[in-house]
Amino acid sequence: MRLRNIKGSREIIGASDYVIHDMEHCPGRWQEIFGNANPIHIEIGMGKGKFLLELAKRNPGINYVGIEKYSSVLLRAIEKQREEELPNLYFLRMEAEHINQVFAREEVQRIYLNFSDPWPKDRHAKRRLTSREFLARYQEILEKNGSVEFKTDNRELFDFSLEAREEAGWKLLAWTYDLHGDEELLKENVMTEYEERFCAQGNPIHKYIICR
Image (cartoon, rainbow, N blue to C red; front, top):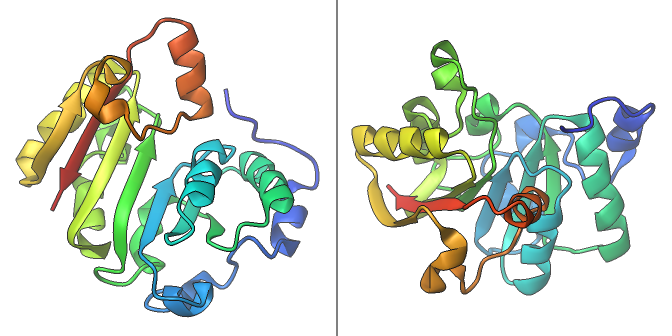
C-alpha cells in the first residue's frame, strides 16, 4: 500500500527544486527546462522513484520526468534525488489524466507504466493507464516512433491492456507473460520496488512494448 499522509509533505514538495511547479508553461519547453535537446522519457505513477533514478543514472543522455499524484510517495523520490542530484531528472505532482497539458505534441519519446493501479471494477476501466482513453492521450504527446513500456503482475490487467492496444490500433513490438524468464526482454530491465517484492513472492511479471 502506498503512503499518502506524511505531515508537511506538500510543503516540502512545494519548495523543492527537483519538482516542476509552473506546469502550464511546460508544453514545448522541456528542452529549455533541461537545458539540452536530449530525448524525453517519462514514467507515469513513479512511486518512490527507484526505477527512474536508476535509469537516469545509467543514461545521462536522456531526460527523465517522473509523474506521481501522491505527495507522500513523491517525497521519497525527492529525498533520493537530493542524494543523487541527477541533472537529467525532474518530477511532476499531478493526475495522469492531465498529461496532455504538460507535454506538447510529439514531445516525448517513451512512456513507462510500472505496476499501475488495476482499477478492477468494470466501470473504472477508463481510468486504467493502459486503456484506449489513455492510449489516445499518449498518442498525442509521443513522437512518431515513440513507445510505451508496461509492466504488471496483474494478469487480468495485462490481458485487458493487450486487448485495448489492439482496439486502439497500436503496434505490439514485444510482449511476455514471464519477463524474468525472457532472456531478451530481461537484458536491460530495471526493477521497481513492487517488482522486487512480487518476484520474491514468486509472481510472474508481465510486460509489453507498444508503439504508435
